[in-house]
Length: 169
Image 1 (cartoon, one colour):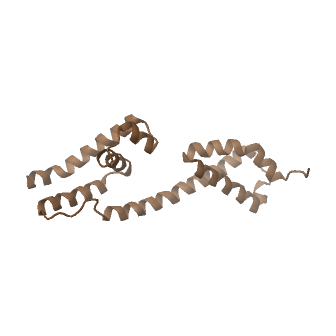
Image 2 (cartoon, helix red, strand yellow):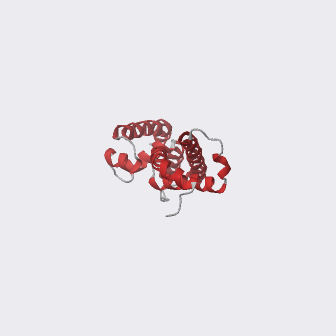
Image 3 (cartoon, helix red, strand yellow):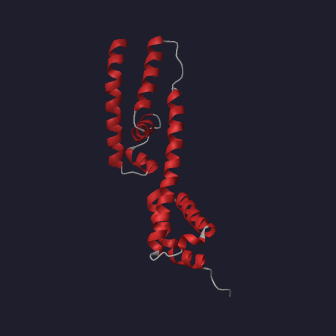
């Protein structure tokens, strides 16, 4: 059996702990695996990075953390871009009633102004009819947090739309 390379030894000794750390950070197994792979590919391409390292695990954790943060930042930029496009679209079908059309446009704009976390919960509750427990499972958060985000989102929508509703009424 051939001797293991230093990189293979490093992987065998630390990959499990790194994966657990990354899974906790990313909350997604696929992302944790991708970041773990990215860290070890970086080390395979640049083995000199390991020269003079005293605390291998701490060094690897820092590399993994930085790679995970980079992934989340890239995703955040992508999500903001997607949200910008989504805010330009109205989720409601057109109507012949001008007052109803105005209200739908204002509602779409008001929804677009909600923080993404609240908007997701409001959508899942109102349009998908999910319970707070189901919303919590979909979004990976506690049911009480889902309920709070829903309440805060509705409060903001009411405040934003009440003057228009009173005017149309």
